[in-house]
Length: 406
Image (cartoon, rainbow, N blue to C red; front, side):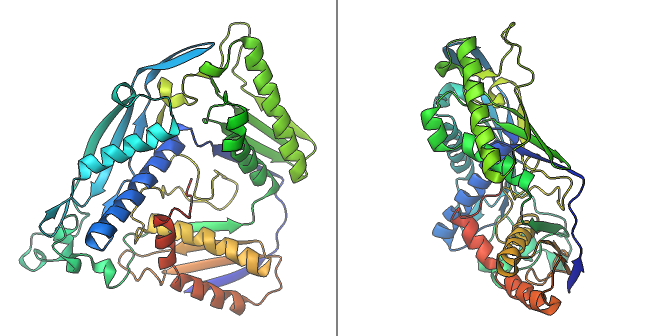
């Protein structure tokens, strides 16, 4: 059932928005889980003709230890990778080297993110996968030959029921809204600029674990952020200070381009230049020095954490890209909301609610809220119906890395 409502929109008195940069341990965990899912999906698709059952949405990272001083930094204890989740280990009579594949992909991912890591000494990978299916696999006589019994060891395509008809694996929801507010754009643009390849090429000292908190009270905007610096490229306290000032000037330019001219900006508020308590790192992330990361604790699929807006706590990364509602509906709601804004020019919110076992292309409830709109509700309802039928396209886009979920 699709419900379309109209409301008047007025700007709230205040809002706050957070973004954990691409080098934050939680964002790294999200990105790693999605990297594993995409690689595993494409591997099984190529070798067996289908995306086999898997979930890597419980992946975690445990921080190591590091030595840093001006001009020098390196790890003294390894980053520990927790490969948690479930995956099919065979198809028919063919075994899948899941452990070897996941360990290889996890190493590739982290070595690419932090190019000065040494695989042998700086990474420690723990393999904790299970092949147990969810409840529903009883030992009664008539149930012993059902697909659920062979969920992670399918005998053939008959044990992959989603091939014949997509169904919701869970009772959950996905939400989305559009467009971004001015504050949300600011937070995304700051992190996107400072963590861009072009910025890093000209400023090799900057680390990737950039965390931003933005606030707006009326028309007063504020941003506080942490910017790590990489010790190998910083040789003094004065150089460290100058680097931060340089970054601040870029941030002020970004805010002005968005139309924010009264930005209150704070950076590295824990720094003490006199005692040299600084955000100086070996590889540019707190994952090197005891911090931990887990899937689902960071940015939502639209790239930010925005508690004053419609949002869900679902961790989408690493979930099965074919039928897992915690991923598919969350991405679908965001995509749908953005398309409604692009097509009709209307601010809106979309919520998709599933029932476990229900046809995935027919959500139990679909709610669309249109703000300050004169367009026909029926027009939007028809548009949403068509978009729901196109949900399988999301899977294809995920496997081609066309969508970023963190």
